[in-house]
Image (cartoon, rainbow, N blue to C red; front, side, top):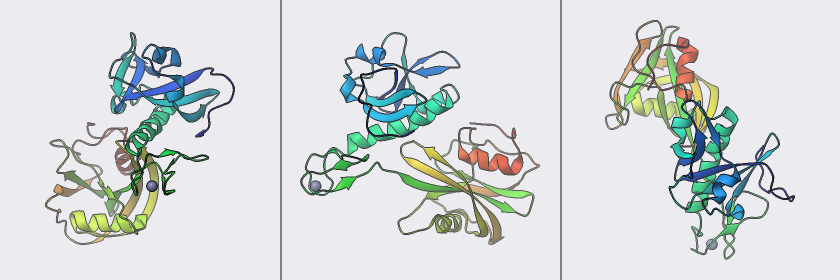
Length: 273
Ligand SMILES: [Zn+2]
């Protein structure tokens, strides 16, 4: 469904992913939300030509736009993406994640990073072009690996990151460094964060994580050797947990972290965030 060029025919039914910062304009009730149509935006003086064309969902064109103010028109509200998970239809949620990243990229790439000239939209691809020196800048994406480490058939590793809320544990994760394969990043992060050696690093699945521009790539792996020794400035505590025993507070269903844990433990265990 992603596309770059809007249709030539006159405007028709369209969904507008309108953001003020990282909050999306929606019509919402308690348990459901919908992305707005252009009529709602016209009231806010948002020009049709300010939209970034995203592509088509079913037969409906989708646009992203940055709102000029943090005001919502009557009957609509601005809400954070995390709070909209499960309330916005799944397909709209995933487009919203793309939209917010494109808007952020648009805002932060108005000038060439090499020579400082104002950029223009490149023809033919989602990129900013410097007319002066030709530098192309693509939307930023930061790959991060996230991994569930097993020990035997029963145990797996959970850690508490310094940045987590009290009592809250998850699997290990970290950003991929330039020049590194994903598997190398998994092994390095596990070594750095808890001092363990692992093997059988297997791809599990991935998840766009637009907070603000990550792609989470999930793996499972098996423990080989080492005693847990948490990296002092990052990990407060790390332990082996039995998948049949009591578990601490775990990440919410929204996250690939929880899918990794559920794949080993089974669903509906532990508290969510
Ligand atoms: Zn330049």
